[in-house]
Length: 382
Image (cartoon, rainbow, N blue to C red; front, top):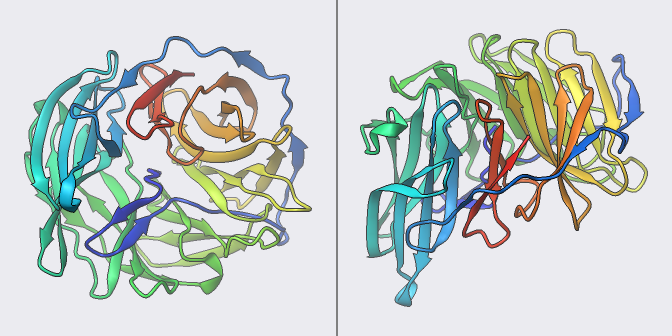
């Protein structure tokens, strides 16, 4: 799932955060093993660096899986609280900006890239400044290499609710959408959507205060099941794992294996396996955790040294889970197969954080994340 951590949707005052998942046990089969440093380790090859056209701070990005382009938005601060804002398409292999889709100068408006969805469909949020607030418009670029806005996506946001998360599924027509109560309560609505066709599934409600305000969010396209994973963030509290059938509304909850905040969550829809990372606490270390949505079996692997796991992404072409990790000084990319075997550890360079990484292109086995300055995108190979 896409993690635009710390991105403020100003029209609603929301923060789109992908966090969350796991701890303790609840009568399920489990195994806990250590992730050894002995896995194959690869040095980072030459890095592609993407610089926005106008040198601003990047407000979201997306990578077209199987394509050659990416999408980003930027904002340059100007005097009087105004900004120069733009939406841009770039070349993944060179980092060059290919086309500026739209630019507005001396404005209070914003562009915020949601990502790439479905089959090569770019999704861009335009926030128009109005008296007393903002209004959101979602523009599509279908396909991305047309290098222009081609349509709109019109989700029906419930009164008093915020658009909180999108799973940004590629290769399948549908993604999952999450709305959260504006009051900060755990009341949520979920539904599926085909962005290219601008169609929507039935609205499904979910409410459990134990899952916290900002759960991790992923989507099993085969089962049409969304997964939420979260807690109150306490280093001694077990996160809740919830699966919600987006056709029937059926909800199933269990307790995870780890403790603390869940930093990443992704699902392989072929095997129905999910991988999550948990922050850990004083008595329980950070884990990479594996959970099957059908069998409800779970296992956990302790991260080596002082590493903490972050974002999790799935490569459907090579059947790999890509996990960002850091010990606070050095960043790594951990590559797992769908059986939970650690295949290799890759030096990740100066990516900004565990949570703003990663977007993948499985065809080229390349990933991108925000640079430390928040004004570049940097690639890695896996």
